[in-house]
Image 1: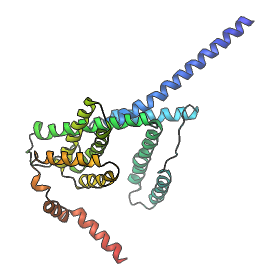
Image 2 (image 1 turned 120 degrees about the vertical axis):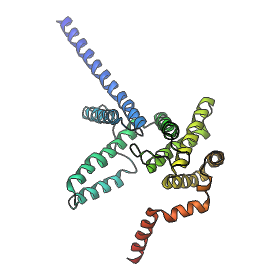
Image 3 (image 1 turned 45 degrees about the vertical axis):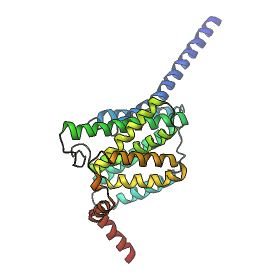
Image 4 (image 1 turned 30 degrees about the vertical axis):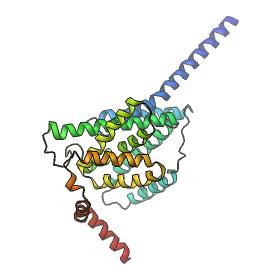
Length: 288
């Protein structure tokens, strides 16, 4: 009788240990899958990989949450603004002219992006994991920018004077914006990193993403750099100095000197259709 009891207890302990190991593996798999998703996010024609990674992570988190094996929290400074925005959009669905597409965008885009955000802040919730997360973005952005430059100007044979963009992959504006965040992260890490090989890697990414933004001549990316550097100046003047030196050095080797002068930038802004639209909005608001 005692032997049977001991055998049953051992089996229960074994099954419990197996379940715990399964839950541990699932918990570890979520940051891996989301890391792969973030890494491949800028690249085209690999939607299947990104979708598999996201939906696998999503259902694993639901599974772990159901069995109370994950500490998942919606606590964030953005939770209230997100909630208000979702409510506003949901109410707007009843007044949409194209309800079918509006509902699709509400579910497939807005709610999906919110799910991505909350999964990321829950799985990369420590300083060490957040640094790893930023390195994933840096490496991904560096490969995208440098690979894009090689593909556009060398493989495709486009003249060096043309704006870099890929109509069948990513628009000129998207190319510029995609390069912005990896550039800022690389700049931040470069001032803190002490290892030589990592500094060299960051310098390569800095140069590649900066060239990508300059060659795309995206106003949004350039304005993003300016405003970001203004903020960085009050916290890390070294980052701003490094950027200015890199900018001068890079412009010296690029055929964009005449297009980056104050008069050229001002003329571009004046002729830009979006600026005219914004000006119209401003006048309408002013008249009201």
